[in-house]
Length: 259
Image 1 (cartoon, rainbow, N blue to C red):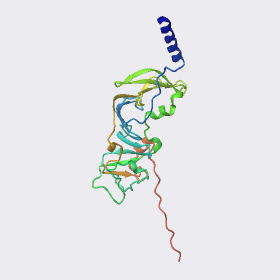
Image 2 (image 1 turned 180 degrees about the horizontal axis):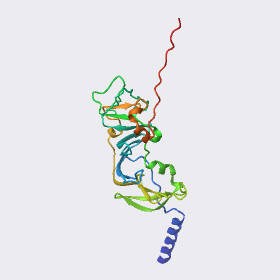
Image 3 (image 1 turned 90 degrees about the vertical axis):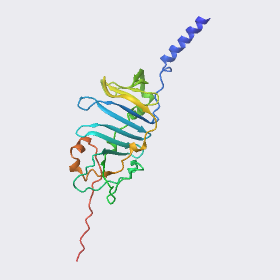
Image 4 (image 1 turned 135 degrees about the vertical axis):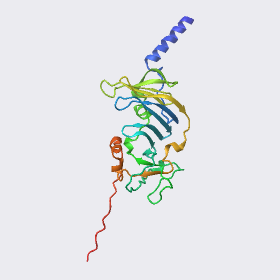
C-alpha cells in the first residue's frame, strides 16, 4: 500500500511538472528599493564599465561612464519623466545662457530648489543638463515586466552576487539567432542579463532598502541648463548622448509703429 502511494505521488508530481504547474512563479516587479553595483558591457567591446544603480519607487539614479564624457551621473523620475545629466565640475559656459525651467522639474530635491535666470545660487557647484525622456536610462526590470509571465519561461535556478534567482528567457526570440536570458530575483531585481552568450549586465553587490531621496534630485548649487542655448559648449557630449533636447528660444519681433 505504501509503495503504491509513493508511486502515485511521484506520477502526480511528474504530471504537474509536465503541465508547467511546478514551474517557478514569474517575479513581481513591484519597484523594490535597492542599490545595486555591477558591470555593464562597453559599447566598443572594451573592458566592462563599473555601474551603480539606485532605485526608489519610480526614481532612479545611474552612475556610470559614458564615451566622450567620462564619469556621468543621470537622475530620472518615471512619475514626472524628468531626466538630467549631472556635471559637478561647476564650470558654466562662457556665454550667458538662460536656465531651463521645465514643468517637470519636480525631480529636484526639496532641499535643492532649481535656480532661475533671476536668482542664481551663491556658488555654482555644477550644472544639470536636461535630456530627452526617451533616452533616459530605463530600469533593468522594465523590459521583463513588460514581457509578462505568459511570454517568458524559466530555464533553471541562478545565483549572482550571493543572491538567488531564476533564469528567464522570452518564449519567442527577440530576433533570429538571438538568445536573451536574465537572472532575476523573486522580488524582481535583475542580477544579470545575457544575450547570445555575451554578458550585458552583471551585479556584484546588492543592498535592498530605502534610499536617500537626495540621490535622485538636482543638488543644491546646480544650475539647470537649456541645452539649445549652450549647444556649442556641450558639443560632442550632445552628439554622444543623442538625447539633449529642449524647445529653442524664439524672440518675438514687435512690428514698428506706422507713421
